[in-house]
Image (cartoon, rainbow over all chains, first blue to last red; front, side):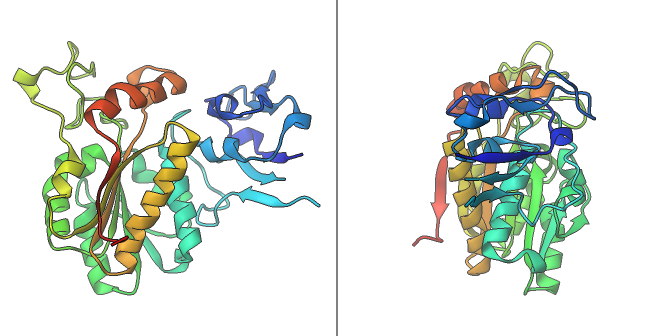
Length: 68
Length: 249
């Protein structure tokens, strides 16, 4: 079981993390953030294994911490 | 008990503001350099040299001292900084328009002198900040704002391959070309950047890493399509790999 700490207002909605996530945990949010983008959202937190691949591929350092 | 497996590198400022476009590989490259500075434990004694281009805002995210240099002269400035403060770790963070076009003379001469610095070059085959003009690394047939019919050999020649040139320069200790298009490539890129810093720390010569990066805005692609281009036509012309490695010898 893993957990990520997302800074919603840093996300610029490139969605590279959604493509990279091996367990399809992530999706897009329905509400905009402070920058005006639809940020990434953790849709299936129960599937997260804390591999931190999403954090490694994030160009905006929006995923600040990953716990396992 | 939860265990922390990843956190924002300490070499990125706490109040950082990544000013790049969505999906731009610049952010990844910045993060990898910061992670390497953390792992080597040299953040406190590192001086970065920012160039002109999208990398100009380096002081907004690197948690180290940054010197801004004139266009293309980053490695000349780095030479001065390193020679006056030899105990510091000095790196330059440049784009291809800066390192390979306007500053090619400074680049080759600094490396010929074997300056003990590290140079990171972001190659995105275009001048990103100024609006996507053709650069020295623009691929043949690539449409930019200054090659609207695609780059033609008879008019503007061939793309410049920096790694192939710099591996022949005697002063370089580590020369590699990496991509950032998938998680495995990102881990490999980090290893190469670390070696480029080790080349400097061991006093072997200049460490150089060319990163094949995306520019989704000026390529007019989604971040995913841009990564597919890096994997495809860009990697065919600019072949990723380690070209020179005196660090492991």
